[in-house]
Length: 293
Image 1 (cartoon, rainbow, N blue to C red):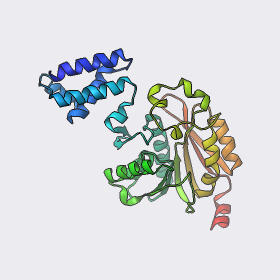
Image 2: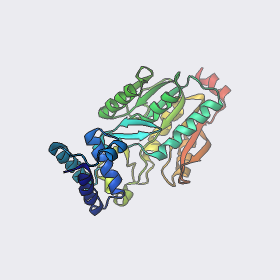
Image 3: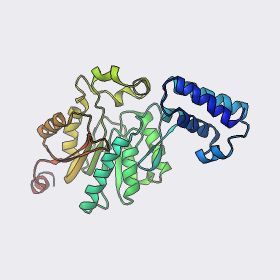
Image 4: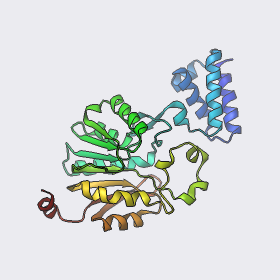
């Protein structure tokens, strides 16, 4: 069987299975199996496909028809122009979260933060902190996660992108026992309400880690748990960049304000949805310095 014939068969199976962009996804899967780019597949489309490679390709196709995310099938996802390893232990990075990177970098540049201390809470694959470290070669960071398996993935991603020497990882819940102050805190906590579970695509609800998705009855439990640690760990003139679930901005502002923070700004994603909220200490920098030294 030729490469083109295999692609046609896989595309048909994916389309019949309700997968959008079936041909494109078939190319991605076959490219992964063969270690070939899209261009290389086009150039050798008439070549024969080895039996073992065809079987591997069909196995991945069947898993995709069962709605397993293509990022888990290939073990990779692109974020902020970088390729990150992902596993079933980590949330799949999404373009919406790049809004946090844009906001954090803008703040750092506008305020001359060349060597910021960064904290990434609930790091998962590490994509947020690693993207920032890649953009700021003198910055250092700490990333936390309750999942040891996720932290191992994040460590490998840090090494992959050459920032391992500046990235430190801690297996703690939220801010845990951390005591240092940070100039930039970034977080994408779970924010889906439990009653929204039935409305999610099977690609998400059946495969991605539940603890990275769901946050109680109203979707704000994680924000509530995070608030005290954020208020405690942010430097006097630092900023917190937190991802928002759709429509929960007001609740998050109220929770964070009650914990001693003030909202500075917010930023929408490419779909026009409020996605990133920025917070700082409510007290003045001078008062904070007197209090915290």
